[in-house]
Image (cartoon, rainbow, N blue to C red):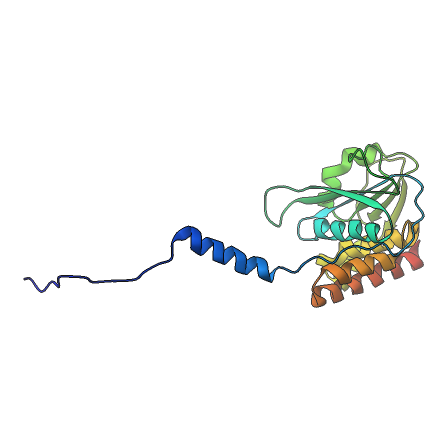
Amino acid sequence: SHGLRTGLQVDRPRPEYTEHYRRYYEAGAAKTKKKTPIEPRFDNRLKRQTGILIAGSAGQKIKSVASLFAEAAMYSKLHATQKDDYPITVQTGHSVSEIIVSPEPIQYTGIDSPDFFVVLSADGLARLRARIEKLSASCILYAEETLELPATNAQVRRLPFAGLGKRVGGSYLATAALAALLEDSRIFPPEAFATAIESFQSDEIARLNLNALGAGVELAKKAL
């Protein structure tokens, strides 16, 4: 009556939730690229544990580039650790990574007195200003040339990082900056950094990062 149909109206069988989730997870896992084992093939010049800080802004890929740098250290027969600091906001604020590289196993992962310090932006500077004020005279500080640094005992080396970022792309500036550090310090060869990039990134992203690496090396050769 009243034009209403009776009986079965819809029959749409659905897979049981946990079974469906398991299949979805397994399909995704199958597509995940397996990491290439790191087999040391480069030499290094380190005699002791060395701490490196790189500070910039969200969106500059600080964390992922720091990981590549640590992997490059492992390609250079070194042990490496990484700690990151960034706010919960997305694409805003600071981004900081602390990297330790050492010829011996690393027992303590804190950096009390950095050996190298890289500052790329005002966000990074604001976050670590107090630490910069306390840097020792043995620390080398690579800083964007337009930043107003606080008084520090560190050996300051100002570089045109902002201009370099416009050339290579802001997302690849951290790669260029760490490449400049490697070319200047020679703690391990830039070629190890290139190997990590080629091993752990897609071809297109690797191409852009390798371009940034080359630009950073050339910057160091000309300016340092």
